[in-house]
Length: 293
Image (cartoon, rainbow, N blue to C red; front, side, top):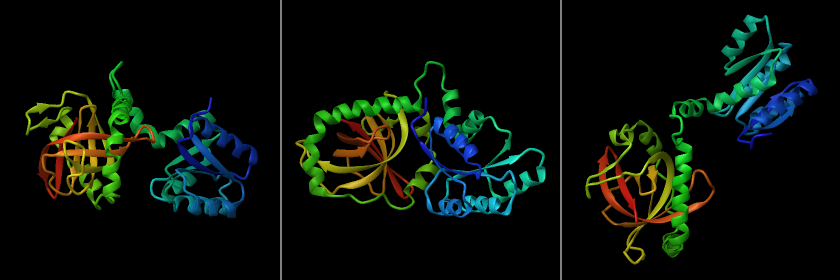
C-alpha cells in the first residue's frame, strides 16, 4: 500500500526499467517521483523543478552522468542528493561525497531498503523523537492534532462572531525579518519545563502543550467582541487547549484578543477569543502569554 506523497523526487537513470523500479520504491514510502533518462532533460529538471530529493545513477561513471550529478548538487537549499554506483570503486565514492552528495547507494540494491534510507534523510529526527516517547505516551504530533481539534470545535462555535473584526482590520502583514531566528536561539526555561507560569494571574497552565512556529493574526477586542485597537501579527511558540505563548515585536497590554491562524495538522483556520495574561520583554521582542476564553 502506497504512502501519501509527502516529498518529491527526481530520478535520473538511463535504464528505463531500473528508473521505473526506483520510482516505484520511493513512491511506496511517500515520494512523488519524476524520472528521466536523457542527460539534457535531467539537468534541466535538476535546476528548474522544485524537489526534495535527487537520485542520480552514476554506475558507469561517465561524464554525462557526472554532469547530471553536478546539476543535482547545485540544488535549492534543503534538497538531498543520492548517487547510485557499483561496488568496488572507493575512489569514485570519495569523489561523490566530495562533490556534495548526501548519500551513496551501492549496487546491487535492495530497493525497499534504499527507499527507506532515502526517506531517513528527511525523517530521522522525527523517528528518533517517536522512539524516545515512552510506550503508550502521546506523541507531539498526536498532541498537536488533539489540541487543534479542540480549538477548531471552539472556533466553530465562536469564531464567526469575529469575522467582522478581521474584515475591518484587513491583512496584518508578515512577521518581521529575524523573528524566527530569534525564537530558535532563545532558550526559555519556561519552554523546556512543560508548564508556563502566568505571573500576572498566578495561574499555572496544567494542560499539555506542544511547540509550534505558526503565524497568527490578532485584533484587540472589547468584551462584546468589537474592535478595540490595531491588529498585529505574532508567532505562536507553543499551544495547549487552554492557552498559548506568542512572540511579538511590541508590548501587548493586558487585553482581550481575537486570534486567527491556520492549523498545522489540517488546512483549516481557527478563530478563538483569548485574554493576554502576561507580557515580558525578551531582548528586542516580547513574550506574550494568553489564555483562551
